[in-house]
Amino acid sequence: MSIERAASLFQKSHHSVVLTGAGISTPSGIPDFRSAGSGLWQKHNPMEVASLTTFRTRPEKFYEWFRPLSKLIVDAEPNPAHEALAKIEESGYIQETITQNIDGLHQRAGSNIVHEVHGTMNTLTCGKCFTKYDSDEFVQSYIEEGCIPQCKACSKILKPDVVFFEEQLPFETWQAAEKAINECDLLLVAGSSLEVVPVAHLPYIAVSRGAKLIIVNNTPTYIDSRADVVFNQDVVDVIPEISNVLIQ
Image (cartoon, rainbow, N blue to C red; front, side, top):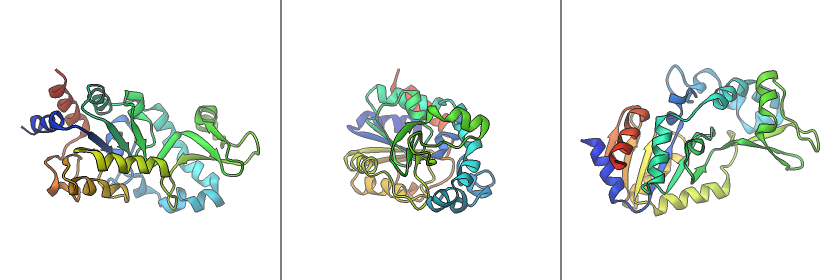
């Protein structure tokens, strides 16, 4: 069976890496961006609400759009897929996780080495004096009252440390992700349609180096034909089963 095949690949690997996208967090109640009919970008033009230009010229427009999504993220809990990955890491079968998500659910589930290539909601930075703040200082008043976070030192509106359209990925984090891909002998892609570059290129780099590839995603990806095992199923139905075989 495919579950046993996937577990066997983990057992034989020396450096396993996981790459996750929005699909691993949708079971926790966080909508993804591109699913037909329900994706956030089906309802909003990303360049109008989540671009660096919009934030610099009309930050209140971003914060108005981001407020209901922020509540969903803050209220979300790790789901069985997050928890299973953390257990597999704890057992020594996963060395690193690369995620496109900004929700921090991997860490809350217990994963320790997580490269957040699209940034994080946990901190905000002032674009004028570069003071960095924990989001806990502002999140309650923002979600409940719509108060836009402002720098306590210079009063400029703070920017969440998430990657906007038109913005570069965090350099050191991206370097760490590339290093992980170049060192892995097994890559598990979980809940990513692999449509957003440059992250979408990472599985191709891995398999071109000879790494084994497992894909768990509801819809097909461009690299399914190069994968050793493909599950076109929900992550919460597959990853815990792999964990159960590995950890007995």
